Structure formats: C-alpha cells, structure tokens
Image 1 (cartoon, helix red, strand yellow):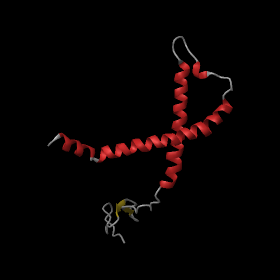
Image 2 (image 1 turned 60 degrees about the horizontal axis):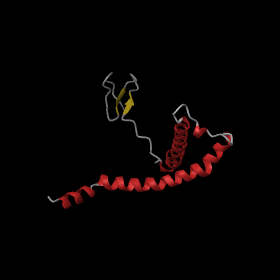
Image 3 (image 1 turned 120 degrees about the horizontal axis):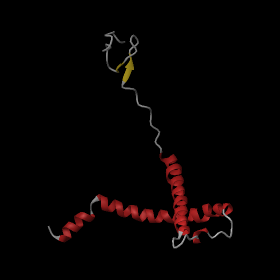
Image 4 (image 1 turned 90 degrees about the vertical axis):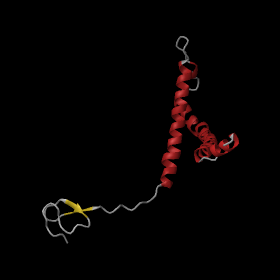
Length: 130
C-alpha cells in the first residue's frame, strides 16, 4: 500500500474526522463562553472586588502568585459557565423521557420472596402462583 493510500485511509477513519469537528466546534463555543464570562460574569465579580485592587500583580519573592491566582480564578469561572450552560441548561432539553421498566420479578404472596415474573410456582415455598 502506498503512503498516499495509507494517509487517505487514516484521514477517513471516524475518529480523526470526529476529532477535527470537535476542535472546530470547541473553538467556536469558546468564543460564546468568553463573551458570557466577559460580558456577564466579570461585571458581577467587579461588584465584589474593590476597584483599585491589583491582585493579579501580587508577588511573593520571585514567584508571581497573582498570575497563578488570576489564571485559577479565570479557569474556575469559565468552568462554572460551561457547566451551567452545557450540563444544566442544555442537558435539561436533551433529557429523554423514559418509561420506567417493568420489574423482572414479582413477589410471592405466601413467602414474600422474589420470583421470576413468568414463574407459575415459587421456588422458595413451592406455592402455586396466579
């Protein structure tokens, strides 16, 4: 098999195509999440933090603690927004209403043990089931 044919077979695998689609959709969705965080969440956070606070520039010796703290806070805020939008909001619409499955067993009226649904006689007390 030539390199061209091997490459074509590799590209046409479902995993590669699915991954490419996921990357493109993820990049587009990140713009939505960034807009929600920058336009809604961060203005709400600005009400909590003082206006002149430069916490992202905090240093401890040579360690830039504020930069790490800022990146961590941004990650947590973005993760929360993604969780609320994807898991809670969209998950609410994606739920399928499933009927509860019928139980595979029934209870013997004489000994109260569980027996198969199609059984005509209890395996525990040998009573005739209706």
